[in-house]
Length: 321
Image (tube, rainbow, N blue to C red; front, side, top):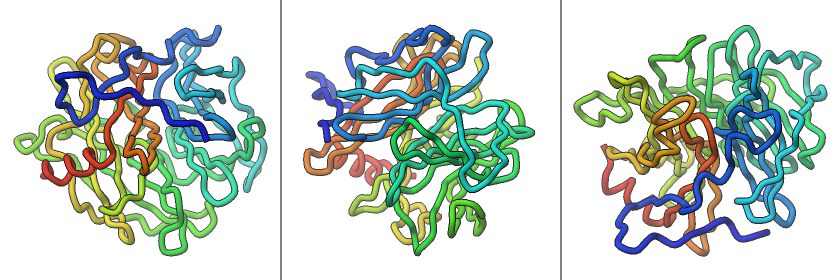
């Protein structure tokens, strides 16, 4: 496997996470049809990396596209969207697809996304090679967003985080976990985490949602998530972290009061939707103590940020609500 993208912390910086100096790594016009490319997923694949990218076209139709990279920074994204075949269902209707996540479990790569089926719900599919894709039953009734699978079964069952929502720009949002024996039928829904009271941590007081695939650590499941505050200028999205119990991930052990990364650079503050840092993927190297997070910037482009895995864990514990 190729080394994950990395850049050392800038001199004089004390931030727990820092941005890549050449951000954004994927421009809004990276393929001929695109209006924007953001909120996308990346995993190690063969000798490099593969990804599933949210590309909104110039009619602002939302769809997902496959892409490949040798180094995780320079990407070759297919010019045509992913075409799904039937997986465990013949019902593969989809009015739109956006905000994908990807994870390898057992023998294949599983993809989740926000799927348009009479409103937003969680679509599920899989691939073995990022060339052929198979769509499965939607996980939940509408309305739901931010479906994020765990990278291994928990107590013998697949597990997924999600955020029940409404049909619009949801002014609320809690993180829930659900379980499945077969990636078709989902139940045992449990609340994981709610927004905070405004006076306790305002950046995450309106809604929260899971981001990249959780990372198993000695301290629990490291969950990178987004938090939202509704300001006089609209929603503002920032990135935080939490540690969940290994065997019962509905139990939050620690959760950051301050954010890890918030909109501050021009490409995060100016775009189709201003003031958005929206994490969707993370690569990590435990031996080298590295964490690389891919995030959507202002609903327009893809950027990355870095941190020491051990420092992010310690920061989460030391600055917990």
